[in-house]
Image (cartoon, rainbow over all chains, first blue to last red; front, side, top):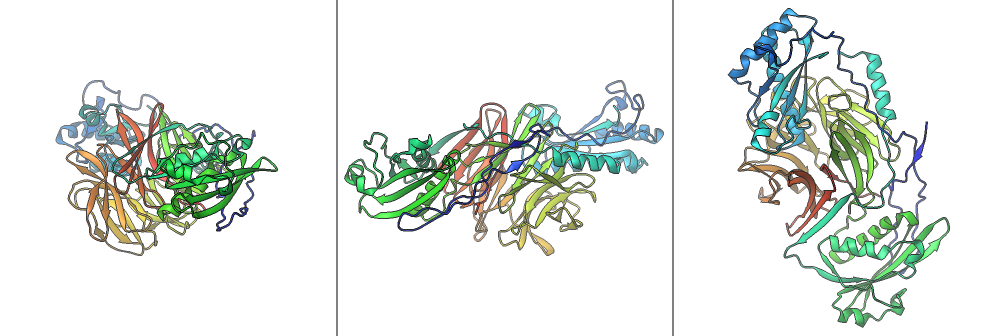
Length: 175
Length: 431
């Protein structure tokens, strides 16, 4: 493996304090070896299942199953009534296709704390999960994750972009 | 969902794949300073005799540090000829005439193996009394660090507070999909990359001794907490439970981390050991979001963000458990608590009429002060001497870093040429 070395200065080398000039005791500054590749590759994804293509409803095509997103108000995770038929339709699909698995991805707009938004995104995903589980869908078919404010669908900085980014997406594994 | 092999492979890859990048000579971040109404002490930092022999100007870095603090103005001494080596060569009346209250005179001596020693003296221009005489040494490549230590010593001698010029900061940059965790000197020079990934990286936190960094990475497509050793790049997974693993906070002894896990449903605070062994101990038990833990300097309490009262507010709980007490009031959005080094002040982000500001709250009196005028402020963090606060904000739709002094008079901006920079965190003093 190719090795690179870098000299990160980690320890204060110096110190010495007196009223007359003195030479400072100096710690050895041996460059720290760092035997790592310079390029960082992301680890392999571990969430993708083996669901074959076609085992999930087509996106954006007719009816409630074609929709995949629930939208929210600021700092809120309540699933509004208008999204219930869509979530119910996906619940019906999962009940009828036990091999299908869905990931619920919670997202937030860019305002406020990244960590609080990460937790809020989790709550949003969980709000959809609770509806599905109440319909009888097995917990094994559902995974919830949050991207917080880290993966905005709309990169804008206005109210329209924010509204688009406060969202839970229903994503079928394998699609 | 995942088998053991994949998990172990992932861990192996994570451990192998941390990075290192050659230090850059020039600052990637550009710094801009704005001082309003602060008293500035005039000081002349004269060129150090023979400093060209090591190829760099130590004295210029010292001067730049002091000027950047906002507490000093530089009296130009670049025209002095010949350059004095010590007080015996110095005509101090010249500098008093030029308006300097203090004069720094010094010299550089080359040492074997591309090393050097810098000696300097700080003089009071009015009394002509020598206030301090010191020597620091380092390798020629470390001339900026040597200069930062000299500036720290001068700053402490004159102001009574420790300087933070030799400390470092960490932050995240984003260009397109590429995020990088970076570390730089507090003047934004010597930027180095700890990790680059095409997935989010958030919440970097220095270990108390400055040798390790805990942070949250989405490299496994969901947030997990890792700790990386700065010198080697070696990484260890600290929390990789089902759901979200995030918001690491070091206990002052460096042996424990508070983390936020959603493995039991909703985000809650747990305590884990920093060697990655042992079981996570649950600290909070609520049916609400509990996140962003931070230890008090004495390690006895944890401040955190919770929406248990219906809106996110900051609470305090003993590390041993018990009922959390609410700390913030007056807004329906108070997040991202951090404590001053003396534990007496809380800095956090508050939403006021739609704008997100950095606010400092005195924990004794409860009084609050809004520190910023921008609108999308995040991630405030105190300098290790408590004199200033580093945070991120947006200017013209781009993420930048900014620093405000605790009295609000001195403001600095740190911007990148392209992309966004955010999640800053100020590192500790290094022994």
